[in-house]
Length: 97
Image 1 (cartoon, rainbow, N blue to C red):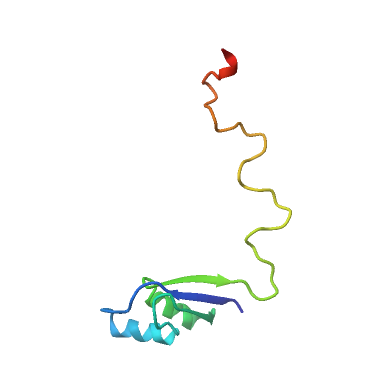
Image 2: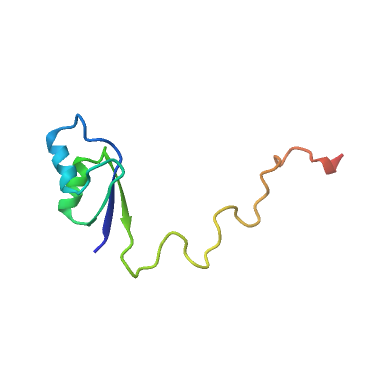
């Protein structure tokens, strides 16, 4: 089952008491604190209730390959064969003079 990493980004001061209790139930006490939970409908419901105060990221299951940088894939920086972005294509270059 996938894990969700939940980080508190905003304070609970002045918030609705039910939102405060939801943050506590998620295991979040202070700004910057992080908790991990299994991805389930109950946890998703709690996240939805306090989504304006938290940041959520999904952790890859243990043993699964990371999807950040697939091996052997070409870089997305610049497509091969594309003209350089240094000068506009219609503008004369210094070599033309």
